[in-house]
Amino acid sequence: MHELGIVFYIIRDVKEAAEAHHVEHVSGVVMNIGEVSTIVPEYLLDCWRWAADKEDMLRGCELKINTIPAVTRCDGCGRDYETVPHGKICPYCNSPNTWLLHGNEVEIKEIEVKDNI
Image (cartoon, rainbow, N blue to C red; front, side, top):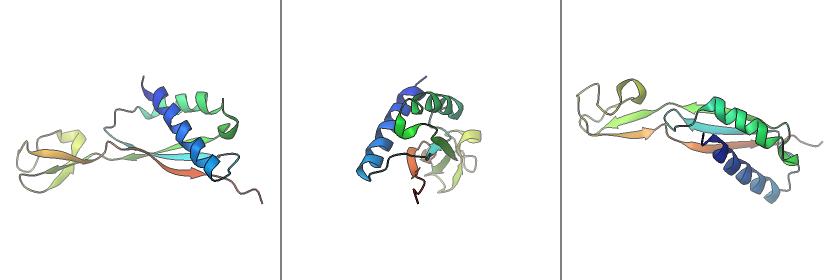
């Protein structure tokens, strides 16, 4: 399970950003996770809860995941198609000359903070 290691990197990056902006508590983190990124969202959420609650700045912080669909582009015919049902062979022209356009992202999209007003 590599999700725990990923969570440690997320926590590190979120804490660095929060400290740079003088934020005392982060209420939410939004992640973009690609459909073929090899990350299991349920495992990531479980690891997040365990690790985040050990940090004062992140205690109770919610991790939200946006799943980015995997899309492949075919150099043979120039069309895009859904990766998961078709794999590396273009369903339009049967060309194997394809490449992943998006769907393997692992990125922090937003860090949410509640106003102290």
